[in-house]
Image (cartoon, rainbow over all chains, first blue to last red; front, side, top):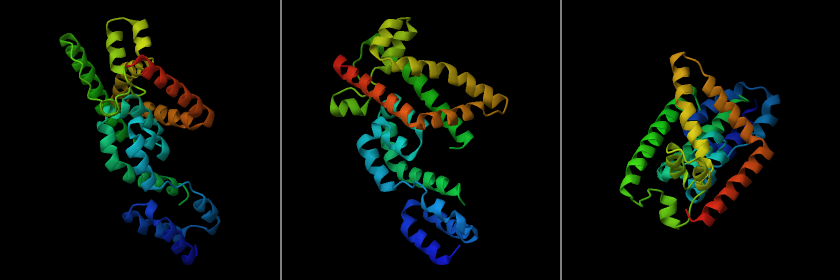
Length: 111
Length: 135
Protein backbone atom coordinates (compact mmCIF):
# COMPACT_ATOMS: atom_id res chain seq x y z
CA UNK A 1 0.00 0.00 0.00
CA UNK A 2 1.01 3.59 -0.62
CA UNK A 3 3.27 4.90 2.16
CA UNK A 4 1.45 8.25 2.18
CA UNK A 5 -1.82 6.50 2.94
CA UNK A 6 -0.18 4.49 5.71
CA UNK A 7 1.32 7.61 7.27
CA UNK A 8 -2.08 9.29 7.17
CA UNK A 9 -3.78 6.27 8.73
CA UNK A 10 -1.21 6.02 11.52
CA UNK A 11 -1.34 9.73 12.24
CA UNK A 12 -5.11 9.72 12.50
CA UNK A 13 -5.43 6.49 14.47
CA UNK A 14 -2.25 6.21 16.57
CA UNK A 15 -4.16 6.93 19.79
CA UNK A 16 -6.40 3.90 19.25
CA UNK A 17 -3.54 1.39 19.48
CA UNK A 18 -0.72 0.36 21.78
CA UNK A 19 2.53 2.10 20.86
CA UNK A 20 4.25 -1.27 20.63
CA UNK A 21 1.79 -2.35 17.91
CA UNK A 22 2.31 0.67 15.64
CA UNK A 23 5.40 -0.72 13.93
CA UNK A 24 3.67 -4.01 13.27
CA UNK A 25 0.64 -2.22 11.81
CA UNK A 26 2.91 -0.20 9.51
CA UNK A 27 4.66 -3.35 8.29
CA UNK A 28 1.42 -5.20 7.65
CA UNK A 29 -0.15 -2.22 5.90
CA UNK A 30 2.87 -1.93 3.59
CA UNK A 31 2.34 -5.51 2.44
CA UNK A 32 -1.46 -5.24 2.36
CA UNK A 33 -3.36 -4.92 -0.88
CA UNK A 34 -4.87 -1.56 -1.89
CA UNK A 35 -8.34 -3.10 -2.08
CA UNK A 36 -8.38 -3.45 1.73
CA UNK A 37 -8.04 0.30 2.26
CA UNK A 38 -11.79 0.95 2.33
CA UNK A 39 -12.41 -1.80 4.88
CA UNK A 40 -9.52 -0.68 7.08
CA UNK A 41 -10.84 2.88 6.98
CA UNK A 42 -14.31 1.75 8.03
CA UNK A 43 -13.12 -0.40 10.96
CA UNK A 44 -15.17 0.54 14.02
CA UNK A 45 -12.41 1.73 16.38
CA UNK A 46 -13.28 2.89 19.88
CA UNK A 47 -11.63 5.82 21.65
CA UNK A 48 -9.81 4.72 24.86
CA UNK A 49 -10.58 8.08 26.51
CA UNK A 50 -14.31 7.70 25.91
CA UNK A 51 -14.33 4.23 27.39
CA UNK A 52 -12.39 5.53 30.41
CA UNK A 53 -15.02 8.24 30.99
CA UNK A 54 -17.84 5.71 30.60
CA UNK A 55 -15.97 3.38 32.98
CA UNK A 56 -15.74 6.06 35.65
CA UNK A 57 -19.42 7.00 35.47
CA UNK A 58 -21.18 3.76 34.53
CA UNK A 59 -18.55 1.16 35.31
CA UNK A 60 -20.56 -0.53 38.04
CA UNK A 61 -23.24 -1.41 35.47
CA UNK A 62 -20.62 -2.86 33.09
CA UNK A 63 -21.47 -0.42 30.30
CA UNK A 64 -17.78 0.23 29.55
CA UNK A 65 -17.31 -3.47 28.78
CA UNK A 66 -20.43 -3.52 26.60
CA UNK A 67 -19.19 -0.51 24.62
CA UNK A 68 -15.81 -1.99 23.70
CA UNK A 69 -17.48 -5.26 22.66
CA UNK A 70 -16.70 -7.50 25.66
CA UNK A 71 -20.37 -8.43 26.00
CA UNK A 72 -19.71 -11.52 28.12
CA UNK A 73 -17.66 -9.62 30.68
CA UNK A 74 -20.23 -6.82 30.57
CA UNK A 75 -23.02 -9.18 31.58
CA UNK A 76 -20.80 -10.56 34.34
CA UNK A 77 -20.10 -7.07 35.61
CA UNK A 78 -23.78 -6.07 35.47
CA UNK A 79 -24.94 -9.16 37.35
CA UNK A 80 -22.45 -8.62 40.18
CA UNK A 81 -22.97 -4.85 40.49
CA UNK A 82 -19.49 -4.23 39.08
CA UNK A 83 -17.91 -7.07 41.04
CA UNK A 84 -19.17 -5.42 44.25
CA UNK A 85 -17.37 -2.26 43.14
CA UNK A 86 -13.92 -3.83 43.22
CA UNK A 87 -13.89 -4.87 39.56
CA UNK A 88 -15.18 -1.38 38.70
CA UNK A 89 -12.14 0.25 40.29
CA UNK A 90 -9.75 -2.27 38.72
CA UNK A 91 -11.34 -1.55 35.33
CA UNK A 92 -10.68 2.19 35.63
CA UNK A 93 -7.04 1.26 35.15
CA UNK A 94 -7.48 -1.61 32.71
CA UNK A 95 -10.16 -0.27 30.37
CA UNK A 96 -8.03 1.90 28.09
CA UNK A 97 -5.57 -0.95 27.51
CA UNK A 98 -8.49 -3.31 26.92
CA UNK A 99 -9.96 -0.86 24.38
CA UNK A 100 -6.65 -0.66 22.54
CA UNK A 101 -6.38 -4.45 22.48
CA UNK A 102 -9.92 -4.73 21.12
CA UNK A 103 -9.13 -2.16 18.40
CA UNK A 104 -6.09 -4.20 17.45
CA UNK A 105 -8.29 -7.31 17.21
CA UNK A 106 -10.68 -5.46 14.91
CA UNK A 107 -7.88 -4.22 12.67
CA UNK A 108 -6.20 -7.63 12.67
CA UNK A 109 -9.17 -9.06 10.76
CA UNK A 110 -8.26 -6.92 7.74
CA UNK A 111 -4.46 -7.17 7.89
CA UNK B 1 -10.34 -13.15 24.86
CA UNK B 2 -8.34 -16.37 24.56
CA UNK B 3 -9.65 -19.70 25.87
CA UNK B 4 -7.26 -20.16 28.79
CA UNK B 5 -7.68 -16.58 29.93
CA UNK B 6 -11.46 -16.93 29.90
CA UNK B 7 -11.28 -20.16 31.90
CA UNK B 8 -8.94 -18.56 34.43
CA UNK B 9 -11.26 -15.56 34.82
CA UNK B 10 -14.28 -17.86 35.19
CA UNK B 11 -12.43 -19.92 37.81
CA UNK B 12 -11.58 -16.82 39.83
CA UNK B 13 -15.15 -15.50 39.49
CA UNK B 14 -16.61 -18.81 40.69
CA UNK B 15 -14.18 -18.95 43.60
CA UNK B 16 -15.06 -15.40 44.63
CA UNK B 17 -18.79 -16.05 44.14
CA UNK B 18 -18.88 -19.23 46.20
CA UNK B 19 -16.78 -17.81 49.01
CA UNK B 20 -18.93 -14.67 49.11
CA UNK B 21 -22.17 -16.71 49.26
CA UNK B 22 -20.74 -18.94 52.02
CA UNK B 23 -19.58 -15.87 53.95
CA UNK B 24 -23.00 -14.29 53.54
CA UNK B 25 -24.78 -17.43 54.78
CA UNK B 26 -22.60 -17.47 57.88
CA UNK B 27 -23.06 -13.74 58.46
CA UNK B 28 -26.87 -14.09 58.09
CA UNK B 29 -26.80 -16.19 61.23
CA UNK B 30 -25.22 -13.27 63.08
CA UNK B 31 -27.69 -10.75 61.50
CA UNK B 32 -25.21 -8.27 60.11
CA UNK B 33 -26.54 -5.53 57.83
CA UNK B 34 -23.16 -4.82 56.23
CA UNK B 35 -22.81 -4.51 52.43
CA UNK B 36 -19.49 -4.20 50.56
CA UNK B 37 -21.26 -2.84 47.44
CA UNK B 38 -19.64 0.52 46.66
CA UNK B 39 -22.53 1.63 44.44
CA UNK B 40 -25.06 1.25 47.24
CA UNK B 41 -22.81 2.73 49.90
CA UNK B 42 -22.15 5.80 47.74
CA UNK B 43 -25.56 6.51 46.21
CA UNK B 44 -27.83 4.92 48.78
CA UNK B 45 -30.00 3.30 46.09
CA UNK B 46 -29.94 -0.31 44.95
CA UNK B 47 -28.16 -1.27 41.72
CA UNK B 48 -29.73 -3.61 39.09
CA UNK B 49 -28.21 -6.69 40.68
CA UNK B 50 -28.82 -5.71 44.30
CA UNK B 51 -30.25 -8.67 46.23
CA UNK B 52 -28.75 -11.40 44.04
CA UNK B 53 -26.78 -12.80 46.98
CA UNK B 54 -29.85 -12.68 49.25
CA UNK B 55 -31.82 -14.38 46.47
CA UNK B 56 -29.23 -17.19 46.24
CA UNK B 57 -29.18 -17.56 50.02
CA UNK B 58 -32.99 -17.90 49.94
CA UNK B 59 -32.67 -20.49 47.15
CA UNK B 60 -30.27 -22.59 49.21
CA UNK B 61 -32.94 -22.82 51.89
CA UNK B 62 -35.56 -23.75 49.27
CA UNK B 63 -37.63 -20.55 49.19
CA UNK B 64 -38.11 -20.30 45.42
CA UNK B 65 -40.91 -17.70 45.47
CA UNK B 66 -39.21 -15.36 47.91
CA UNK B 67 -35.98 -15.75 45.91
CA UNK B 68 -37.77 -14.59 42.73
CA UNK B 69 -39.44 -11.76 44.65
CA UNK B 70 -36.05 -10.69 46.04
CA UNK B 71 -34.35 -10.49 42.62
CA UNK B 72 -35.14 -12.70 39.58
CA UNK B 73 -31.54 -12.30 38.38
CA UNK B 74 -30.53 -14.47 41.33
CA UNK B 75 -31.95 -17.51 39.52
CA UNK B 76 -29.75 -16.85 36.48
CA UNK B 77 -26.64 -16.38 38.62
CA UNK B 78 -27.46 -19.49 40.68
CA UNK B 79 -27.91 -21.54 37.49
CA UNK B 80 -24.59 -20.25 36.12
CA UNK B 81 -22.82 -21.02 39.41
CA UNK B 82 -24.21 -24.56 39.36
CA UNK B 83 -23.55 -25.40 35.70
CA UNK B 84 -20.28 -23.62 34.87
CA UNK B 85 -18.00 -25.49 37.36
CA UNK B 86 -18.90 -28.87 35.85
CA UNK B 87 -18.66 -27.53 32.30
CA UNK B 88 -15.26 -25.99 33.12
CA UNK B 89 -14.02 -29.25 34.65
CA UNK B 90 -15.23 -31.22 31.63
CA UNK B 91 -13.46 -28.89 29.21
CA UNK B 92 -10.22 -28.80 31.17
CA UNK B 93 -10.19 -32.56 31.80
CA UNK B 94 -10.84 -33.56 28.19
CA UNK B 95 -8.92 -30.61 26.66
CA UNK B 96 -11.97 -29.37 24.77
CA UNK B 97 -13.32 -25.87 24.28
CA UNK B 98 -17.09 -26.27 24.22
CA UNK B 99 -17.55 -23.65 26.95
CA UNK B 100 -15.37 -21.18 25.08
CA UNK B 101 -17.43 -21.57 21.90
CA UNK B 102 -20.67 -21.29 23.87
CA UNK B 103 -19.36 -18.05 25.39
CA UNK B 104 -18.47 -16.69 21.95
CA UNK B 105 -21.88 -17.64 20.54
CA UNK B 106 -23.68 -16.00 23.47
CA UNK B 107 -21.65 -12.83 22.94
CA UNK B 108 -22.62 -12.78 19.28
CA UNK B 109 -26.30 -13.37 20.07
CA UNK B 110 -26.26 -10.53 22.59
CA UNK B 111 -24.84 -8.17 19.95
CA UNK B 112 -28.00 -8.50 17.82
CA UNK B 113 -29.76 -5.19 18.14
CA UNK B 114 -33.28 -6.23 19.18
CA UNK B 115 -31.97 -8.83 21.66
CA UNK B 116 -29.74 -6.20 23.26
CA UNK B 117 -32.54 -3.62 23.41
CA UNK B 118 -35.14 -5.97 24.90
CA UNK B 119 -32.68 -7.29 27.51
CA UNK B 120 -31.71 -3.73 28.44
CA UNK B 121 -35.39 -2.87 28.96
CA UNK B 122 -35.87 -5.98 31.13
CA UNK B 123 -32.83 -5.07 33.26
CA UNK B 124 -34.02 -1.45 33.62
CA UNK B 125 -37.48 -2.64 34.69
CA UNK B 126 -35.88 -4.97 37.21
CA UNK B 127 -33.79 -2.07 38.48
CA UNK B 128 -36.88 0.14 39.02
CA UNK B 129 -38.49 -2.75 40.85
CA UNK B 130 -35.35 -3.08 43.01
CA UNK B 131 -35.45 0.60 43.93
CA UNK B 132 -39.20 0.39 44.59
CA UNK B 133 -38.65 -2.60 46.89
CA UNK B 134 -35.93 -0.65 48.67
CA UNK B 135 -33.35 -3.47 48.64
